[in-house]
Length: 150
Length: 275
Image (spheres, one colour):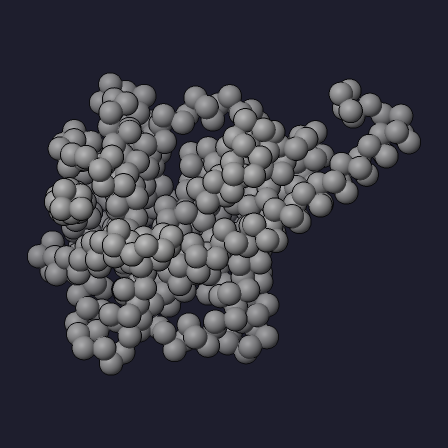
């Protein structure tokens, strides 16, 4: 646990620096302005990972991370406004770019397996993604309209 | 995670490569390509996944970097999930109001069965199509099929094929279509924001990005809904597949493949020599 904690903190520091630089280049937000925000997001991630380790249930760690973030920012919770103000400085798109850069490097190894699959897989794969995405959006739309929300 | 991810921070070569990719792609910035009535948005994160993939085939990236990158995707996704979380808190009243839609849109996962399964059977795929089309084919679904049929079964090969497809192309494909669909269809951006939560963390990032770029004035609301939808999917998605998705796919596959045999017998056309 202590070993992974040290590892996590070091890795998050590196990822955090990369995100701050991307946030600066792409969205003109100076790194020291976004620093408290990224520190808060990393703190929430760490807390979620630790809770996932300590609790015996089989919930994915991202479930804990999302819930902690949500609880901390419910209006009225002490510090919620500050957390929201600081984390707004970290653009979502700046967080996403390094994720997909790591993903790109990582999927290179699956490339040859992928090529062997043939064209049918590509066609069906696109329809699977499209079907799921559009299916969810259509159902959400119907229910939101039914409730009169949109 | 953790023990096996030992000394990830030491792979400076990987981190420098990623930093370089981020610096280059963020300075290129976003491009909007009008296509018919909609827009395709090219975002830095889309270039990032393509450049990362291309670099794998250069001496700059070795297998060691590629192996180390995998847990790093997970750890950086957790920062994204934290961002989703802090956007969701302030929108909580709105989310509770939209609660039924958020829960029920999980049924949208069945869209793939209605759309992709008939196509797979039409293209002549056998039981592979069950593994391929019962769900979006992420980690949880891979585990489910492996558990039920084994990975070397036709169903196992199907889900593996879809898993690899989604891993290699999922974020690129869904990143390109989400902004386009949102601008071209009459559906509300919030409905699409909920739909971005159905896949993996990197797919959520890739499909939410173009939405936010297309509707910047709604950015906070869209992020909040995407995050909560992702949260709900991560908890309920597997059960959805176990109890509804997979049984429905199997049933529909049996009906579809029987119809096909009948047609083949009647018309005398030999669709498939083996059956």
